[in-house]
Image 1 (cartoon, one colour):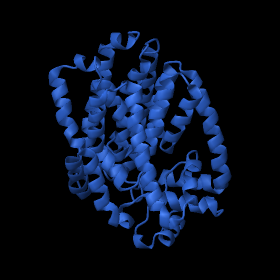
Image 2 (cartoon, one colour; image 1 turned 180 degrees about the vertical axis):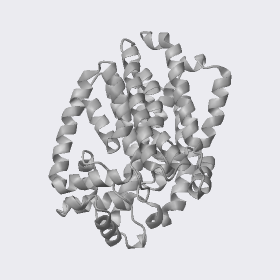
Image 3 (cartoon, helix red, strand yellow; image 1 turned 45 degrees about the horizontal axis):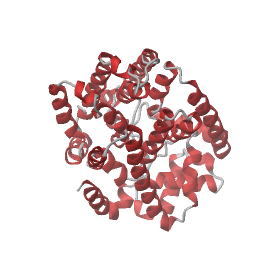
Length: 388
């Protein structure tokens, strides 16, 4: 039913491609780089011209391109696909990535048939998966890369782990908490491999952009501290987004406060890595102690990026750890998670937040969840120390 539900929703949204899809930003950037105009990728005016030339149905709509130069080389290849076919190719790739993510999670956590069915049902009924697939965001690719990295870390294959984590460089602030935990846990080999791979990607990105393009990216990102015109960080379920909603005329102050909290959170996550560094199940501890808290304190991410927290949820609900959760906490968690399912998530986002809502329930639920799972992990350290 969940699979059919997702397919139905995607088919219903298909005719509205020009009005809702984020694919034009990625495709236009790829085509600009391939045509030798990489220096203009982060110029909003040039992006507008390129997007409208490729997709005339967009009318006055324009999507800012915020993928960082490190990850740009991963986006460029889509520019080789003919414009008439790119919609179909992109959606197929997103679907394959989502399916591979489910398969990898099944392998990593050794889910049985029933557990796998629950995973499929929960993921495909989530607002995050729906929104990511509906508007053609890269979250499915990031989840697939992240899950591949988790599998490689479990198998102690650092080069493959770095390869998987490099995909998450599309939005590096979402990977940074995990990296800090790994640094604290002294998992140096995959981090060194990732640094080498990142340097290679950065060199390729610089060749594609040039100095002017790098400066353009810096200027574009700097503008988001005071403006939400092209990157609506006020809608992010983060501390920064919540401050922007409550104090819309004090964005610079909100950015400073949230940045300070983010740095403190990263320091605490590093401490968590040190605390669990000798645990046999350090990877499970990392997913609980780094990802939820890192997301809540992150500078920005959007609802569809919550897909990245699926592995953390699986850790929490996998026996025998699930049996250690108090029944009242399990019930409250299940009720709170309803906010993130399609019927509720869509209404909250489109009918409340986009119409002037000032309290983001997604942020508060994520904050409570992140604090709860960290406390839970520390209270059950013996579980993570057990050898299997």
